[in-house]
Amino acid sequence: MFNLIKYRIKDVLRSRDLMFWQLAFPLVMVFLFYFSFGRNFEEAEQMSNIPVAAVNIENSVSSEVFYELLEELDGELLEVVHMDLETAEDKLDEGEVRGIFLAPEDSSEFIPTLIVARSGIYESILEMILDTFMRSSLMIQRIATDHPEYVASALDEIQNGQQLIQETSLGGRTFNTMFQTFFALIGMVSLYGCFLGADSMNKIQANLSALGVRRSITPTHKLKVVLSELIIMVLIQFGIMLIMIGLIEYLMGMELGGNWGNVLLIVGMSVPVGVSMGILVGSIGKLKARVKDGILAGTSMLLSFLGGLMGINMKDVLEQNAPIINRINPVAVISDAFHSLVVFDDVARFQRSLLILGLMCIIGITISFILIRRERYASI
Image (tube, rainbow, N blue to C red; front, side, top):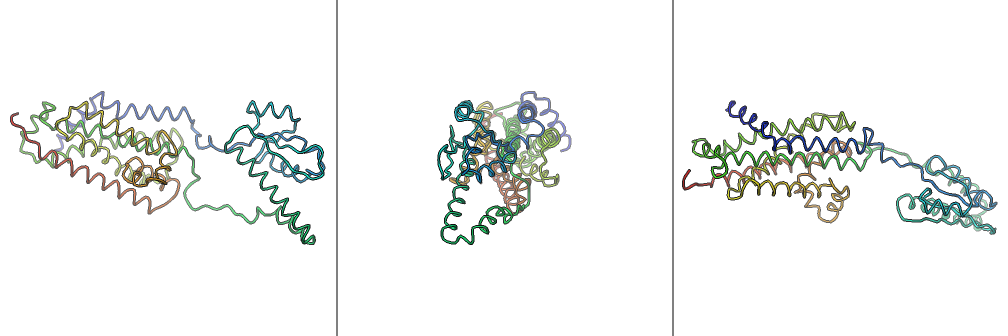
């Protein structure tokens, strides 16, 4: 048994085509991510100050409060530049500023205006700032009319209102949208063990390889053959996954929860899923090997896409509209496991993901054994 495992591992490692998809291609993907986002990629998406133009704000007596608000936000959330309207409009068209706060030139009542050129998160923040200011101003006016004695206390409450909100953490880490891409990448590479599983089945079936002919006439039980192939392929893919995760953690500088025991547990449960998927498709004896590889490649890419590799929001869209897809998609389940470990610190979600991965593996191996067990040859 030991010699069988040793020589099959050597056989797989010497297969250039197989090793390209299993090892070289994932490493290329990791390096592409590295050069795209850099070592400090977690800081890449931190929001910078929003460049905004202020027109006539400092020149209007009635805009003194709003002017003070902009001065307070300048350098914290905004990058405020005072200029004339013509210059501000030119910079807005060129994209150098994201909005213009405009004060009327001749008005005893100050009603600021926001001018934007497009819609987006920055423009929404500017609109929220203006809306908050207008609501607060309206409230003060009503208090001054109905209860003028409370104006001073109301202004004090507005200025110190931020003290009522305390920042806290529910555990885990601050969410970065790039986590989803990396988790989906890990899930995709785990799923690429399917090519190893399919190759192992090609070496078992007599109609696909000479080695399959020799192994088909041996008295070894089919379940033992399948399980031995599963163990061999899982060991190889497990080693490949360790190399990849090591690069992500130490080259990309992305901490995967700080608990290597849980990381290894996720990898140990996810790798057999990909291998068993390959064994399942490879067990379909009437299909040629290239057809099986095409099916596996297409399925892997589709599941990776649905798991958020190509579109960060895809997994969230499915969670809201068709959550069952995320439960049966191994890439999404693997991503959930890492999310619960790295971001959310959710033990229940972590355990659920591992349970689903275990069930997927058991179902895949069981169906594969049934298919192989029924293979019969008129002559060998």
